[in-house]
Image (cartoon, rainbow, N blue to C red; front, side, top):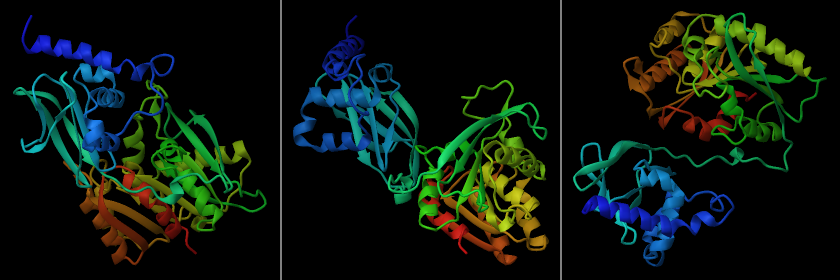
Amino acid sequence: MNGPHQLLRTSLTALLALTMTAHAQKPGGRPNGPPPGAKELLAALNDPMKSTDAKAMSQLVFRMWGRQALMKGKAGARVEETTAAWAVISPDPARVVDGRGALIGQMKPIGQEGLQALALELPNFHEFEYRVEAGGLTLLAGTTRIEYYPPPPEWKADPSLPQGRLEKFEWKDSKVFPNTARNIVVYIPAQYDPAKPASLMVWQDGSRHADPAGAMRATVVMDHLVARGDMPVTIGVFIDPGRTTKQKPEDSKAGNRSFEYDSLGDAYVRFVLNEILPEVKQRYSLTWSDKPEDHAIAGGSSGGICAFNAAWERPDQFGKVLCWVGSFVNLRGGHVFPAIIRETERKPLRVYLLDGSNDLDNPYGNWPIANKNIAASLKYMGYDYRFDFGECFHGSKGMSASLPEALKWLWRK
C-alpha cells in the first residue's frame, strides 16, 4: 500500500528507532527522571540549536507524551502553568485551532518523519476547546484550561519546623449513612499537648486535602501556621464522603457524596458529631476544646455548602467556616440559603468564602452569582465574614493558593 498511510507507517518505525536511546536509560526501558513538561518543550522549540536536533527533540516529545499515546493519536494537550503543548504524528502539516476554527498555532515539524509539536504561552484563566487538524482531518480534540497560581511558601514542607503526624482509618459503621464506607485522616500537630485542649478543624473531601503531596496540602500549611502562631494548635479531621457498598476504595467518585453534602438539614453534622469525632477521640486518645469558637469546618464545592450547612445547623459546635466555590445552587435545595440567612437571627459564625468569575454556570445555577448572594446576605446581617472573589474555575486551585491567608484570617483572635 502506497501513499500517506504507508508514509505514516514508515515514519512510526523511524521514530521508534530514534527513541530507543531515551527509553533504554534504565532497566525496563524507563527514562531517568520525570517526563519533560510543556515549558521545557517550549524552550527547546525556541532554541535554534536544540530545535534542529531531530533525535533529541523526538526523544523529548516521546518522553513527554509516551510512545503509545502518540502512535495511537491519543496524546492530548499538556499544560504547565500558563504554557500549553500538543504533539502528533502526521505526514501532513498540522495546526491547532480553537472551537470556532481560529488558529492557535501551526505545529513545528521535528525531523522528516511526521512528528510535529507546538508549545506556546496562553493567557491565564482561559479555557477553550481545541482541535489538532492535518490533511483536512481532525486528529485530536479536547478542552484545555489555563489556571495557574504561584504556590504559597507554606505549600512546601520545611524540615526545620515541627511536623504533625497523620493517622488513617476506615469507617464502615455509620448509622446516619448506612451501607457506606469512607476513609478518615487525622492530623495531630507536633505541638499537641493532651493537658491543653486543642482546637479542631473538620475537612470535607478529606483525604485529598490532607495529602502532603496533593493539590491543597492543608496539613503542610497547618504545620507552618501552627509553628508561627498564625493558628492555634489544631487537630485536623479529614473526612471522605461515603462510598456505596458496590464501590471500591480506589473509586474516584464517592457515590453518596451529593446526598451527604448537598442535602439541607442536620443529618451530616449529626454524623460528624455523633460518629466520627467520638471515634477519633477514643481511637487516638485526643482532647480538644468544647468551645464552638475553637472549632472550624471546611470544604469546597458541594463540600463547601456542606461545611456551611453543618455550622448553620449547629453553631453551638462550629463557630468557623472555610468555604470555597460553594455549591449554593439548586442541586438539593441549597439555593435558598441567601434568603434563609436574611430571615434568620444572626448566628455566632465567622465565614470565609472564595469564588471566581470562571466558576460553573449550568442548569443548577450560577456559582459566582450564588456565592455573591451568600456574601451579600452575610454582609446585610452583619456577620464576621470575608469574601475573596477572583478568576478561579471550579475546583481547589484558587483555594490552595489562598489557604495560608484564609486560615490566618479565620483563626485570628
